[in-house]
Amino acid sequence: MGKAGLGTMKFIHAADLHIDSPLRGLDEYPGAPVARLRGASRHALAALVDLAIAEEVAFVLLAGDVYDGNWADFRTGLFFRDQMVRLRRAGILVFMVKGNHDAESQIAKQLPEVDGVKVFSAQKSETVDLVELGVAIHGRSFPNRAVTEDLVPLYPAPLPGRFNIGILHTSLNGREGHDPYAPTSLDVLCAKGYDYFALGHVHAREVVRESAPRIVFPGNLQGRHAKETGSKGCELVTVDGGVVTAADHVSLEVVRWHRLHVDASRLASVTDLARQFATQARALAGEARDRLHAIRVSVVGESALHRLEAEQPGSLAAALQAATQDVDGIDVWIEQVRLDLRSPFDRAAAADQPDALGEVVRLVDAIGADEATLRAWFTAHLGEMKEMPGALAEAAPSALDLAALRAYLADAEASVLVQLAALDSGEGVR
Ligand SMILES: [Mn+2]
Image (cartoon, rainbow, N blue to C red):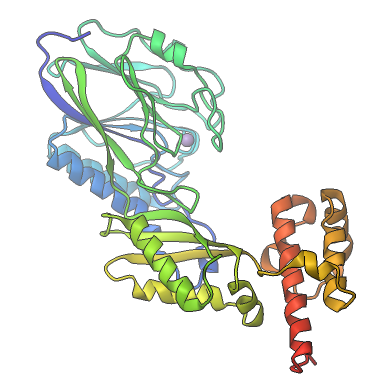
């Protein structure tokens, strides 16, 4: 497998930068660190360039979707160009293809080319032979957004005696949540005779094949929302004698997204909740203390907190917000709080009682008996509700999943039970 006489070199492989991705909906989150979130894709690219210079890599591969779409104005392109100039000054080459988001037809604005930055043609596949490095790089850009054919058979044959790299924007044989562009298969890639496939398009990092050839989706450089969680960055690859001898993910994101579940079943107060959250947030951040941690929190379980929230809506979100004040040395922003709580309550015993409480429980059981009954009831009664939970107000009941409907039903039951309890204790709801 080795190619005798080839020395040691390093390169970087990244994809899906989505620079200046619009991050819609941020305005709906009061207190969101909007500037940090909006600037994150740029700062991550600057960090990539810093890494390339520090590691003295020979070249950087960018496998598509550098841009999210046509630039709102020239500043997006000028920022990227400036980073490319930094690489050129350090003697580092760049090879890139255009993906579906930044396909030739998508980007109307133009800027002058940068020496040392090769953008592969959208009309035909091409090869760049780097004789001194013993590397051949093959690539092709997307001419338009929806490339439906397999591009790999159109890629050139490997050059003998070279470390052959293919840069390709592709959904491979299909990846959940990603449009099926330039589909291909592992067999087709393996049969090509290359040494490394630098893929792009899929935002979650995936080593599709370890070696011969090594095939990798590096994931995006910076997560854009709470569904793109965890460490994001690039691949730093070392090749020695024509063989990959080291290949590591390097974390470059400046905002790291998380989804955090807090089990509230043993929590009885807002202080308990804040302490539990702080412990989990510290564990999530780990050693990555130099960046913003954006967290979507779910508080779940059968808990006394359910009644507390029913009595004083907003208490739990405020407790979590307070907890971020207590987490020293870690920058935490809570993007959203989702509650899926039930009150501890002996429902079976209550259902047997001939009182108002028993009647409520029996009614809720009847409504929730099966999915059809539950959906029919929600559809019939939505119009009568004056104060609907946020998500219910926006969504049609047919679009909500069963778990969500059951959670709303449980919430409704808890609210009624709280009011009944208040009547009992003489604090009647007037
Ligand atoms: Mn893409």
